[in-house]
Image 1 (cartoon, helix red, strand yellow):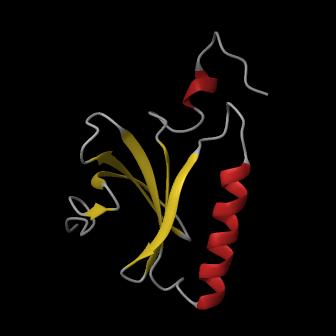
Image 2: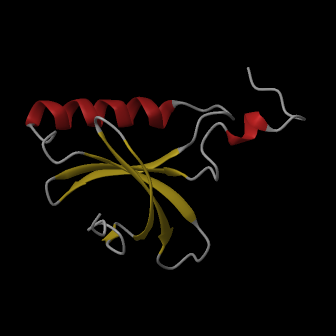
Length: 110
């Protein structure tokens, strides 16, 4: 298997450091802020073939909805955009995944 071409690239002010997961609509990566060391985020990229005008509009609508959600169990959306034929969202990073906190025996998740 080859090296992921996005590893080490810079999007916005973030350098992609690791691949987290890949699904039917896109891939998620861990990235670190270039200037604010130890500031980790998750960056979700839609697959390149999902870049029609309609798909970009739906992605922007999703980003708008996510930006308005405020809940302790929902990762905050920090930014979104389009770069070199790809749509991306930048969100807070949850080590171990967004459900990791729920696996803690001392914490109850709804």
